[in-house]
Length: 253
Length: 235
Ligand SMILES: Nc1ncnc2c1ncn2[C@@H]1O[C@H](COP(=O)(O)OP(=O)(O)OP(=O)(O)O)[C@@H](O)[C@H]1O
Ligand SMILES: [Mg+2]
Image 1 (cartoon, rainbow over the protein chains, first blue to last red):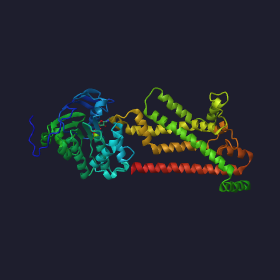
Image 2: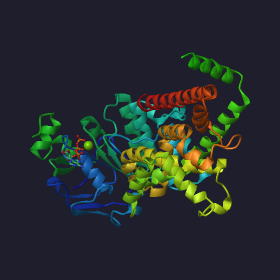
Image 3: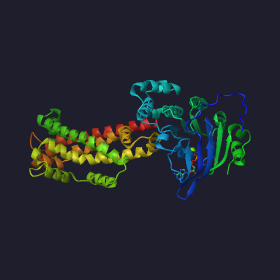
Image 4: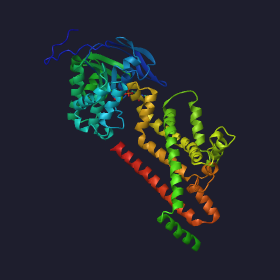
């Protein structure tokens, strides 16, 4: 399908080396329950793939499977170079729905991941300062990460993930319960990363945010992929009736 | 009744005057127990953290062993260490029996399982919280051990304090391997046992009061640390 002409053309993001991503017959079971059921999808767009769906649809599970934190019960996940591996995971980063911050200062949180990845010692302080500035946390560097406000914690978790210079970024509701300004600050960081060629997968319940950031949408429902579509047509007229209901704010059953 | 009141007054006088015998006994007690606890932490903290994080064959048996050792009566520990250090024992050649070193060793054996068991619990709880993030970052098991010991540092300090409380208050092990020799291996608890049996209640009471004070100090410190930690976590 030819690209639609957008009124505010943004430069196409640089191609991501891990794409295309192919998901084939992906299932995840826990006990007798099938929580994800036969998901087939191909993701080629290097920008932002937004994953939508009601609570319990399986969005978080899908992210964890894609990142290789869970093992599929059936089906495959194939990145451009092959199946998920420890080496591939090092080129990806995830920000959890509830970020896990270490019990140390904001700066030390970033220092920790840099050290773990063998980032040269001499360059660390400069890099940490840059990342904290990016998050607008320059004056919070020495503060224990766990006393930061919710929004500050989310921003710290996001730049800490970016510190690893990932090719792919998984974001699980990074702005849930944040005020509009903090939300925009996070979105600015996501766009910035995209400008540098980072492919992102974003789970959100904020439809406005989805509209602002999405290049492509995956709509999940009850563990199934109901619809995969480019952002524009999806928000104009979603193909599935459930997606339509979800966007309208009606109860999806 | 009058006897007790008189002994009490005398005890306070001894403390106030910093009686040399009293000071010597207290100093040795502190030296022995603090050294034993420091060594126990050096071994017990990494051991406990490793038991919480690493998965290896025989881990379950080791956890069981630590828990069993934690409940050992001090006299049994004293007896075991005595057997090791006695002239015919495996460490007999060093001639350590009836020296402060022997007492340090006995308290070390007594306290290490306590420190290890508490460390294991603390680190296991933290690990449950951090595990997925660690996996996402590709953090290996040994780095996890180090990281979690650091993350749990405040709770682990209370493990050290618990170990110190046990060491300083214990009498059975040090009396067997130390022998309660005047000016050599007499510590607070063994002195109390001896002076009481001799009927010299003043010195015994003075030492008892000091032990009580130490117990208060240690527990207050532990409580303050716990509160500070809670404040940090929920602020
Ligand atoms: N370990 C587990 N054991 C059993 N059920 C699980 C487990 N993990 C997730 N589930 C179930 O799988 C379903 C999907 O969970 P998931 O966390 O992916 O939902 P979600 O789409 O992210 O929802 P939300 O929008 O509320 O975050 C839920 O019904 C959840 O209860
Ligand atoms: Mg979720």
